[in-house]
Length: 155
Image (cartoon, rainbow, N blue to C red; front, top):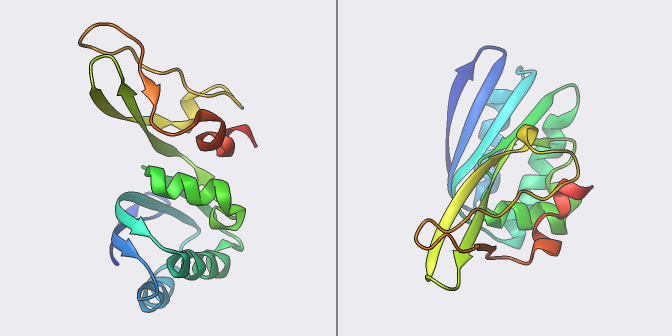
């Protein structure tokens, strides 16, 4: 796993890249030392390819070390990240999901679409509406089971 850090008005944005696995522990230790003074952190997950169980463990440990006294946000959460948040609540910890992707498919047209949602733009405890397929104006469906995928929104 690699990362880049950019300053923002009141904190830092961390873009994570690659695979989060057992080899990520060292990256997280280095990252901690670069972030420990920041009071607001935003983690961007758009370029995370995958995460395994040892990567989850490393992430949870890293997040716990940072949580106290900070505001933490997750942006551009991929489906892999959302599934981890739903299965393992400590993966999110005290952070807030600011934005997330949903994969949609149209079984009629065989079209796929990946849509980014800003959590703040959604009504509390509601599932975002599925888009219409642009090809035939037919309805698209989430690639994942809605009852399982949107658990984090309904908590």
